[in-house]
Length: 102
Image (cartoon, rainbow, N blue to C red; front, side):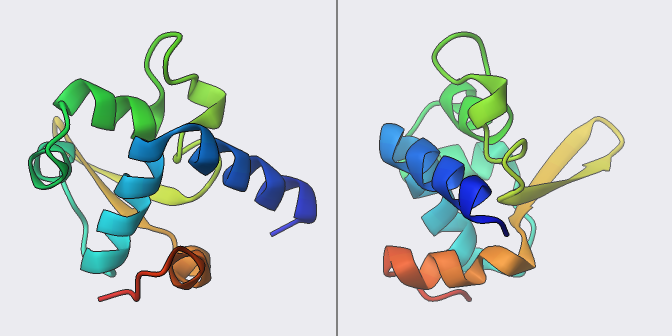
């Protein structure tokens, strides 16, 4: 990961508490995949806001600052369902946030 990309990731996480919480949640279930609805329920957040943090949604969650666009999470499509998990190289970020994977 480049220094510039790392800076963008840190900035995105600092600007959105929910993005950081989603990363912490995915750290906790790593290396498993998770549905946005499960993430939302676990965090006490709305489904729409979790999808916004993951993929971007409107003005509040800009797509270019989404966890997916920044490469923090990966997406797997199964039919109409989308699942997400933390990318392997961001396990170290979990440690920096104070949450060990798995």
